[in-house]
Length: 296
Image (cartoon, rainbow, N blue to C red; front, side, top):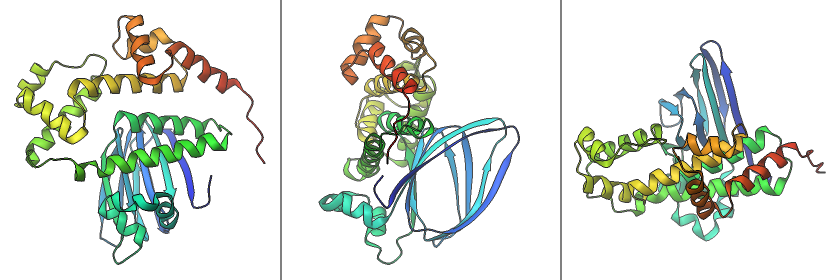
């Protein structure tokens, strides 16, 4: 990994409630991707005041605090998985080069290190970001030794995050009021939790008191994709994550994400990722059993 850029993972399942205090001076911009479970980070001391952040599966956030102290609380009997990227502002500014002006304003201030550059932001992960974050998580946890692959995944995750973190600024969202945006976010969460057998648009429309056309328009504005497109992408990215975990065969993965016809699943997977699911799973298992390369 290049100097000034590093990755860490958190993987724990604790029998009892657990909390720990921390205090540090910080030089890095942090990107956190929360893949499973939930926990609360009570940042009691930051240059912009106290913040309490609830980190839940499917969320990601970025932040920069020169000085920070707080308490992290993890509930009992809860599996927690997360991956973090840490990058020095100067290193990220150099990597972005002429694209530095396209990132969110809060991040731009941190890159320039001018005035009050401290910030924190949080939003939902898209299926693409979630899939790459999972690949990186399993790569680190399994000590995958090819540095070029690992750095490539880090850069891919950074790039996707910066694009999506800036999307709300670029997209036309003025036709959605705050209540409607909250409703669209709530619909997305329900679709993610019921992805294997998602509700029909008519059911969502009735339950959330929002017209189908407004719902479709809202998804396009906030996420750049239709409701149907979002569900399909989420299913396939979920399948890719299941393959990375390596505990299920192709048929089990297809059924887990709601495909009854295995042929339809294979066709959709190959169209999205360019490889049949059986071949992809075979490559994952071969990689898992290959001796780690020695890198000097």
